[in-house]
Length: 464
Image (cartoon, rainbow, N blue to C red; front, side, top):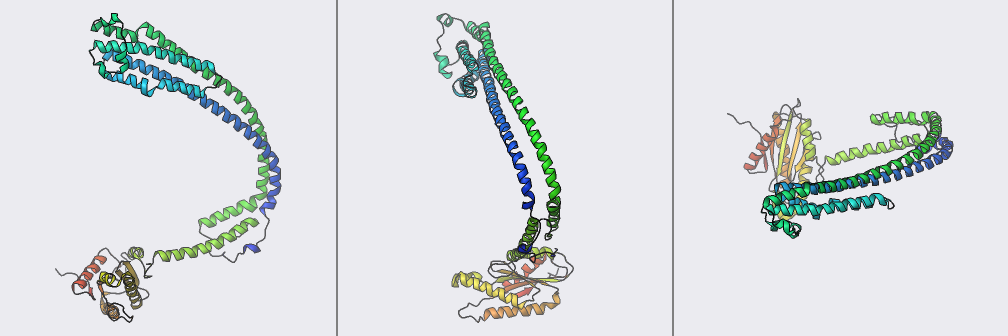
């Protein structure tokens, strides 16, 4: 990483042409044009919003008209199906639409909401259509009452409106077939069809009326917006001319430094001090901040790899070391270390003393092993040491170090400090870290504990 620039660039000593001075006359020149453009844009936006709002209302009104037609047709469909099949589900669906869904009534409310208050013609046609649809219900309920009796259906399971509908005395005496035929005639006959056509005609009239008004308003708005846009084109031409002139003047002072800064940032370099005064100041400030950031990142990286209590490398660093030393062509040794009966220290002397015991182990490990060795706290009372460039023929050296540490733990110099010890398992590898090395050291540690703790064991391959 290049360090050709840094904190030596003091912002207070920089000189150069200021962009503010250069752009002042550009601002003055654009204010007048901006006022004209702004006024034109406001007018266009107001007209557009008015048109969009009006169009939305008419579209929603048109959708409401369609919903009314759908609701009316749905009632017709269910009444006819019941007359033909005598299945109660159609009667249930019919009265669910009438009493719960109420698409027709809700559609009328939407039409009233979205049509202008002075548009009484479309609103009246919508009300007439709903009135006709309600009149059709008389025929439909009449039909369902006849169909239910002809099929011998249990009226108590049908809507109260069917139960309460009074049939003429003449029809009460009809045979089941005559009632069935009359039920179908009522919802398929000429009178019914005529009323359906009247409903459709009125709803079509509402739709045509809404579309006609919407087209008229759109034509007016289109003309007004076209005139406004023509004025905006003229203003835009003036702005483009001014921008081109401005671009020619500031390209060398702004665009070139930006390109240089982008390349510097991409390459993780300090910024070159160039361009207008503001850019020079920015580059100097950035370089100072960047340099401090690098130092902070190094500090944070060290903190992330260190155990907070002991200051040793932590488990995360251990995992990174295993990956780094995986199958490298050099000999290493792995030592796995457990503090013996650590729980009893915590239970007897308290957790503060337990922490002091861990710190003491960490300090002894760090002071007895080489500075090039990696001393790690894996977690809890578990430690590890990775020694590089050491072979199995150096077991005596490792044994000496571990004996020294256990002697120091058994003979504490501090007053009232508990005596304790460590157990260690050691495994060697000629070709860096490999998947079995940890298992081998762990096996050796297990044997050290079996042998009474306060000692160490070297891994020996089992002979077959």
